[in-house]
Length: 504
Image 1 (tube, rainbow, N blue to C red):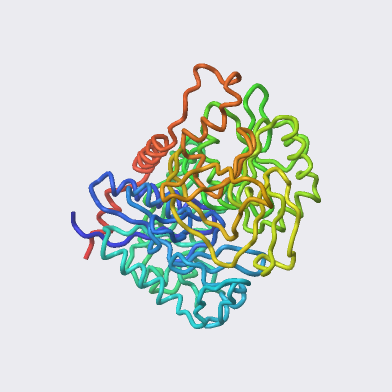
Image 2: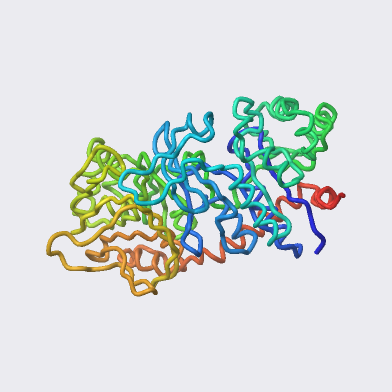
């Protein structure tokens, strides 16, 4: 195949659809015989993914890699910031955490040091040149794949951050990328946001923007024909497509904004699965497969009455186990979860949720904060000790595949017997199972495996319709990537984009 320029999708703001459009083009290029790979220099998200070699990247790039049909790699997202509070983030560089960094230091004072996480034995570089690191990752990726589908972050017109921007137009300049600006018409003000985003760029950066895509259009596309022409006239940049809003194509989303659109209520007459809405909830994509499973109704809640009435309660991952445990006790959810278990509901904990289910959570090295110990929910006879070193790896077990991303070690409490939930292919055991309605595991993605979901729902077999069949999530995702590509092909001038990417 001929060599194509890298293609970068940038936005007029956050949540305009850059990640989804990039995923669509990863699948389009793959369908057309190319070997594409995604790239985002810097990502900020709590939803992350473990690569095959046991390193950590943002979930969006793992999804885009899946759309491209290739394994995820840290070069696709070399810098990941995982918020720990309003002011600090854990810095993950090339898949490994190197410490915590204050937001002011990160954005304003390049060269300020990363503070190692308490209790961590990991080496921390004090003078890391992040720009050099992300550019090197891109260069390695570009040597192996064609084309690179790049994604910017937030808005390209944050003038106060321009000097420290690693991910938008400075990265496009390094890559020699053709840039397409994505605007969200659904939120209103698309003319001002598109024109302003372009007008605020320097002349050199403005020349990098080769096209505009208007995303999330509702209604008759013919009504925007004049608007399309007007945008092209005032911006001097072609509108390459107007993509209609869709809610029938299911692609995993990374942005926390997506969580606000999830179901928050029970549904009568179905097996109700409640995901407890923790303050520091992470990796909520763990539940996307259950959301699509026709046998159940999954919803997110911190409502005590709904928790008490649910059939299955899932305690999800959390970035701050002790803080969320304290909040569960304060808001009454802890008591409701224990009460629901006594009533006969199933309780499953994943990662931090597994830690919450134990007898205690200890943090003697102050990895998470000042709290050294809290009693857990007491649903499993295990104890957890927080540790500074992070475990990241992909795993295989008797139910299928998944991955671990966690800090802390969990073991049986006192003289409690070992009763692992999972037996891993490398000979290790994972998790704990008290009975078929009470269990916990460190493995994210376990619910993507039909065999495990069937095991989880076995106590409710009499309530599942005979017509309801096990749900194949892997086949479902492949179908959704193809549907997404078809949708974007219908509404974007892909042939013109190929011409842009092929010009000398």
